[in-house]
Amino acid sequence: MATTPPLHTPAAGSPAPLTPLLVFVFVSSLGTGAITHGVYFLTESSLGYGRPSNYALATMFGAIYIVSAAGVGPLLRRAAELAPWLSTRTLLACSVLAISVSCVIPLLTRGGGGSPAPWSLWLLMANYAGATGLLWPMTESYVSGGRSGRGMRSATGRFNIAWASATVAALLVMGPMVRSAPLGFLAGLGAAHLATLPLLLKLPSDPAIEARTRDRETAAHPRVYFDLLRLVRVLLPVSYIYASALIPQLPSALARLGVDVSWKPAAASVYLVARLTGFTVFERWDAWHGRRWMPAAGAVLLACGFAMAVGAPELAAGSYMSDRAGVGVLLSGLAVFGLGASMIYAAAIYYAMTVGSASVDAGGTHEALIGSGYVLGPVCGLLAIAVAGASGFRVESATMVTVIFVSVLIGFAGWRLGARRGKLRRSSDV
Image 1 (tube, rainbow, N blue to C red):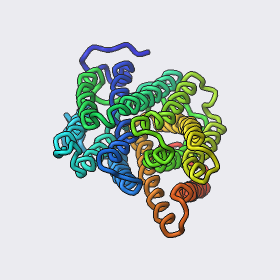
Image 2: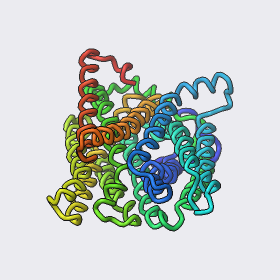
Image 3: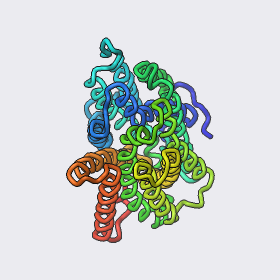
Image 4: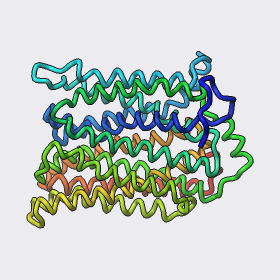
């Protein structure tokens, strides 16, 4: 483990100290987990949102996230030309401040009944998407910059554990507060983000990109790494399509199975706990590096878990099982889904940051692919609602068909693109 340096910027090319960086990742992910996974329980309980409104909110979040993540690299380069003093660390601090302010907005706009103004939650999601779209690519570059070999594998694995464990904690804490003080919880997240600013003083002004580039020039990556990077860049957005179609409809699905509102976030956290378990295993066990079975198995588990979780309420409604059994099938599906998601994500970030030399652009591409899933998942949900209304199908059945159809199209398009390119140079994968 890297030791903590003094407060001044470390020498050029040295990696960022991992301990304060992982604390920053954990606290930042508390907010990200609550917003991306838990805000739909808040909108359901405070604003009466159902599937259509939650899907629309999620679509807006994803669209802004894509633009922000894809633009972080060009933004930093443009900033270096216009304002040389504006470092990666400074922009990271600005992102944290924007997030902190956004979290307080709903509390400041609550009406006489205690519910926030609907526009305030939309503004929160828009600001949060833009700020975190900048924050995560820069953070990922700090995590892997200046590291290679075992150090690189350990850092990216521990990064996965840190952010995944925080999302679990966020939903477990949020559960009791959905009824009692949801807006206070959001404001507390803003304060937690603000408290991470001193940790940034421990980081160098910019990630150690140059050191990783020199290492890349002297140590060639196996050819299979580039092939696997192309594969996981198809599977990563597909996994987030599934997740972002599944998560916004969980409040409604759990309600149909008779689960009380205060238990809904805890039930949803089964997916997050399973994902965290997978990350922990794959950080300790590295036999999957360079192996094609890892993303393939992840894709199979993802599809099976999704079908179980989405189909459980319909099976219960059709008298194929009791509501209690339906809850068991849904929770089991979430666990299978979480394990599959961990396999795809662990492979995606490892190959992206290894082949991509830990650059902010590599992190931006990784996060933009996630953002595309954030958009297409709820779009599939909205299409499923329209199909269900026109055809008489249940929403759950229409959701499964729509999501699987879109994911197959994406997989086919990705395969065709890879076939056309043929043998790519390594630089084309960066």
